[in-house]
Image 1 (tube, rainbow, N blue to C red):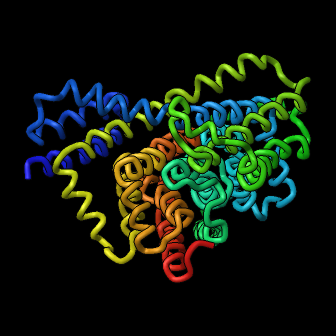
Image 2: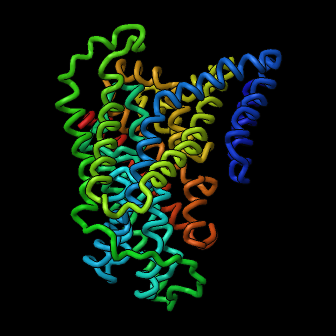
Image 3: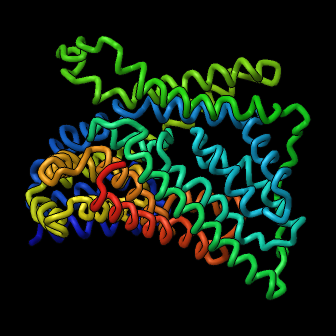
Length: 462
């Protein structure tokens, strides 16, 4: 019982202290030690840290660093070239002020579906959203909800082909690609999009009917010269390339490659299916980056600085997540974890999809990170769910899509780093804007997940 209490205490402290702003780089190893001590294995603290925690951390970096690196560089290139701003402005101009909310959501959705990170999207779209909402006399407090809906929901976990890390992580565990269970993903994504738009529109209508306008806000928006920004065609081209290149490579070209050499020990004795999805996303992002550089050649003020900042910007996110994975590896090594694992698997003995969704969601909520919770869940129980899937005739593609969608629910609780950063960008507080973020990024995605689990249970993967 002491070991089980130690795990619960450790997880609770991780959630609370992360919310208080303490970096997970420090929290993860320290709280892993707390769990170890309560388990009665304090004598092996150093061995556990170097041989389990660091092995888990390092293994995650080895698997996913190329995706974090290329995604961050691509996002910075989209930002500094002005392409991200161009896409947002184009949608705003086409849809007009009467559809302000939809314009902002779609702008964020297109950018994140093309591989641009939330932070780049937030900085690029917020000034446009603030100007648009002020002009239309819409309450500013709804801007974070609109950005969260476009960046943290359907394009992050549901839509097939998204290069988001939350869609990439399950590939290595289930031997799938980024387009797993495409129709189910589209259905789930539409529920999130339509449900979120309905909610925000209802809230805006209610607020404006009560006489609420933009509000008295001292917006500190830095004016950016947009006269040299690229046109919409050049701006959208890299986004289109990420999706199409990923699809063609994963479905048609890479399966034709002679990959027999991968069976050799020096290549990890692996198979093409285990790396195909990752290879496709790497190639897609490299292609998009090169095209983005070439088509905007005259616009680069300092290309070297842009690339360097993008590369350095990838380090903290991946090491934060990798530290959480190392923490999960330690927890999974403890004897008391067997009790936790058996309990979670037994939540729905006849339907592993429910257990998988609950486990991923809870861990994402505790860590305040979709990728962190998903990584811990699959590192500790991925093989278990794959075996259960074979036992109950559940395809790996369906396991992939449920795991990915489950990571985007409780992760967006108030202590989530992306939520805190988004509110900081917009200059708003949790009290002002979190109720709408919570609805569009937590409640509605959970409803979408439940619908997809139900459809997958009765009709399988499609």
